[in-house]
Image (cartoon, rainbow, N blue to C red; front, side, top):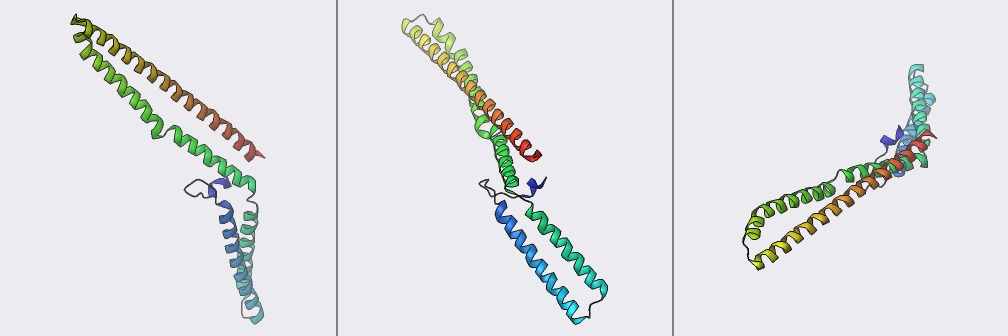
Length: 180
């Protein structure tokens, strides 16, 4: 649950350790300030008992916060980094790169179909041997393009599957770490 408190730089690297030290120092400074206020109040004996009790309560609250900051361990930082990787895998899987390839494949498929509809009958019905040869070559080229697109689609699907497997493995690892 503490993981979401950790922040990340734009390149995804955790800066939780720096933040943790900065927060600890800030809490220490505040605690020292409260201690000096408490000592001043006690020395001058001008502070009422309620003021002293209020300052002691603030000091105890700050001490609890410092103690909780000490509990952020390397394990917590590792868990946060793993979550960052999982989120980036999720983002990439849904990202523009993969969907663009799918869209290009669909567009090419549609264009090939239109070309076949327009050019096919003209070339096939002409009866000219040169046109018939061109028609066969054209058909062969279209078939090769279609085959390449199918191979690309298979690679794309395999890439998605591998990303999902990696993401699932990382999720299992994170959950195991969190459970410890």
